[in-house]
Image (spheres, rainbow, N blue to C red):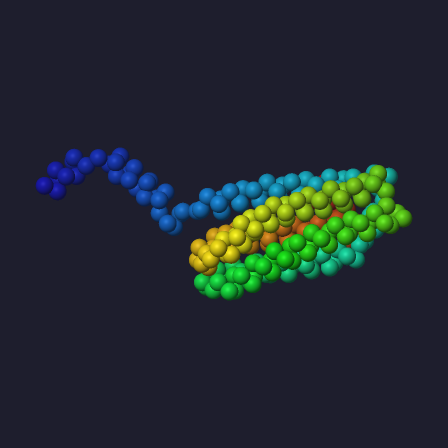
Length: 219
């Protein structure tokens, strides 16, 4: 009987079942929201890389005059760091099932993010009030474009944060909020990393950016 069973077995059906099991296995499952976020972050990374390269290349022209350093940007950076730490605290609370910790971390992450955006608007006004302000200066134009683009991405993150906050207000448990909090946290960390690069290379040291691009062979 065993020999007869082996002869009549259909190996292609067995292989097909194995493929189905492989795709439905929990070990290989990835929520579509996580996959979509990863793809989006990859696109945004390329976008900001191109902006940095364009910024560095534009510095080679004679009409380039570096924008004056704004001390307020240091405070704004600290606010964004605190917001990222708050979201991390919320994520840890969601993993542990501690709803109170999620609440504190989520509110802190959103509050510091709004404070950062407010600080960026104040930095824009501070720059406009300076005697050296000239929107035709490529450095200042880049400043507004890049900080504005970063702020728009943060606003988009705050939309997702707001939906998560509404779920929290409606009484969702920590476990039910885990995926939403995790996605927001990843996005907050990503925007913090992007801002640190922009702040460090574009606004704190134009010479450092030129050296880096020269080493990479871009200039």
